[in-house]
Image 1 (cartoon, rainbow, N blue to C red):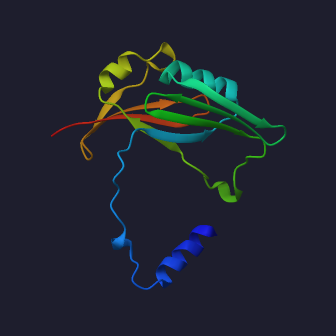
Image 2 (cartoon, rainbow, N blue to C red):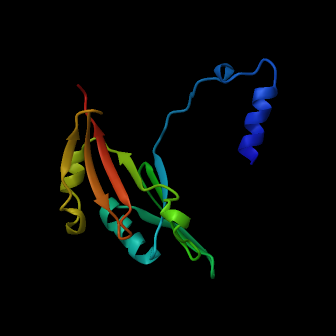
Length: 151
């Protein structure tokens, strides 16, 4: 609702256009994603073991949610166990169905994976000039790790 109001205001304001906005001047320093999980302990263990993340904080409200925030160099992950989360009518997916990050050396990353994730295979996506490694967490969320390939 607030976003719609903001868009409506921007459209109505004379002399203000998206083109007038300054380009992004900040340097992106990393990635963030949040995933819904069924067991925060199992998910936390997987993200720690496979991606080397460390737990930063936990919060919960009984009967509503449990949240574990994890981080590592350049990556922040929020694990959400929502007690009332359910499939939407008609089976529509809500939220991300895959998340990912970019690394500078995917071969080294894959070689360092623990046994629980070592079956993953690196593939080359020639359409986008990237190497891709696809992992699955305990809740079957897809975690893609990519390396940009210079042509």
